[in-house]
Length: 159
Image 1 (cartoon, rainbow, N blue to C red):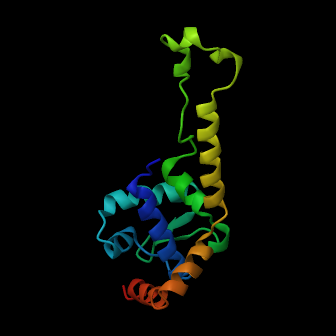
Image 2 (cartoon, rainbow, N blue to C red):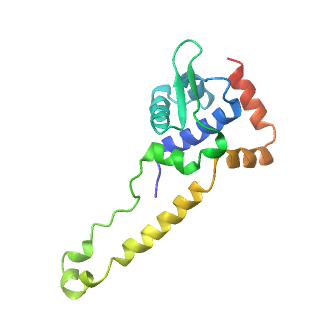
Image 3 (cartoon, rainbow, N blue to C red):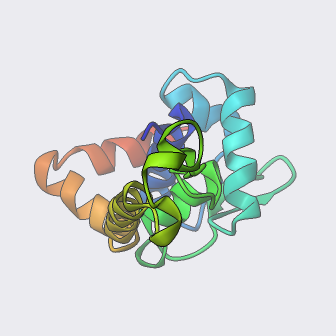
């Protein structure tokens, strides 16, 4: 399965918003500048995150984006679903009912095993993403790169 680059951008952006904290909104342009991303495209990801209730936006000169909830309540699956949508990654079109295969098998007698295995795999990765929060990600990054959170926060607050 391949996720769009918007998922990566959204995950990093939400992580940065978690480090900035709820007291300060960050503009889309500033969030985009941190990774040298196209502001208009990141803006679309931020709109999707806002629509899903992951971030909130405020207008005006001190406006921008902040997390809509505590980082410990935002799962990685929340962010992925906001960007990619809730649709299944694998869609079985029942090709086993077409061509010569349909005449030599008894495909109609049982569910598609390929579909079942793919669905099981998808459920496993969805559960894994749903079990991880932004707080979990913050802790992992802090352990591996202790200075990153503070330097990131300082960069955003220096605007």
